[in-house]
Length: 459
Ligand SMILES: C[S@@+](CC[C@H](N)C(=O)[O-])C[C@H]1O[C@@H](n2cnc3c(N)ncnc32)[C@H](O)[C@@H]1O
Image (tube, rainbow, N blue to C red; front, side, top):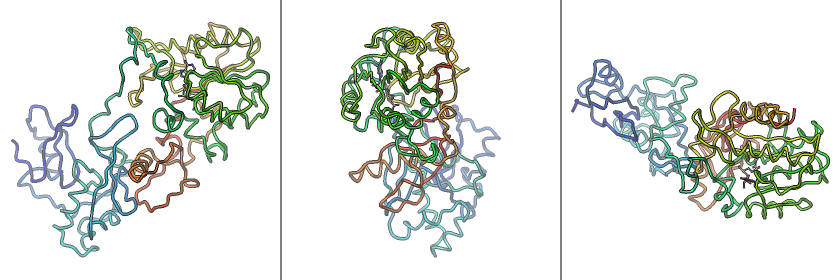
């Protein structure tokens, strides 16, 4: 084997191979045939990974990863080898005595030598303590040649880790390879925490009033959009209302509406019944609506159509379930009636299966779906969801990784946190946290990425 410096090892992680420097928390891609080219040798030497080539660790700058936080009196960090549909597993790293002060001194600018001097410890002791934070299984800190460049996101937001395996159960596809999620939805055991842990929606993430919506919740913003467009009169039907949060908001914008809910999951229908007195609930499917022909003035479905069937075709996925739903919408709408659908997807690109979810939702190809709507004689205006509801994408929210870390810590101590787009005005934590990160609504937060969502409805 090539003469690697102490603390350097070649690791196989998933399909990737790299040399890991346990003293700095840095890595370099390693060739499958173990042949070290002159260019690779140069890189390895520059990262202090070659035995006999001198390398000054004391002058390096320790930089924080965003997937580590000091919570209460313990350093919590994401585990590179534990990942699933809900995010990464997190663990506590016990640090005692003066070592516990190390994290507070890491500010992406001070060198190891400066930190050692501030702590009044020998450099070798400080480097040994850092090696616990830079270990492959921790990755809380990297020792770098200088400050990270602005926008050097890789260092902060990601771990060197194998890819998340797609979590799938038998029966989620049929014999054609089409997605088949009806039974999975019918078996949802309870509304409680389903939208926090299993399928968080934009509506759920924005169920609390948010500055990005002028201090309103998502459902109310949607209700105001429908009201402005003149769609909230006569018989209104919502398909797939989930927790009932959207209905609650729409009814706040237009109290006293004639409101019917159609829901496939009995447990969710029961939760909606309890939450929404004065509305009518029907057990049934979007693709076989339990409603008479020409009986509805306005029908909408928020984040439902990716749950319907998609079939793999020669040129990519076809959203056959959403097409069947449109045919049903055409059947039940009164002449002059309106509809509105929202979902994650694309207008020009290809529909794709979302690998990170625990069930195979396929994104919507809105260009094709709009053409299908037109062929049925339905108008089809497609617009980015954020634009439709006037969502300010620059408004703040808690960064996804920080949410996962807080959730892990709270669960380990018998508590929990809902998957909301928390912002500095409403996240109150009864313990100190050093390393929490805020971002904005166009970035990854506790809910889905809202910039991937479109709305399609009557023109
Ligand atoms: C992703 S959730 C969205 C919930 C809610 N609309 C929201 O935005 O938070 C999908 C909802 O549609 C329901 N659903 C899934 N397939 C359905 C179908 N074929 N017919 C009716 N409802 C369905 C689910 O049970 C759930 O209530």
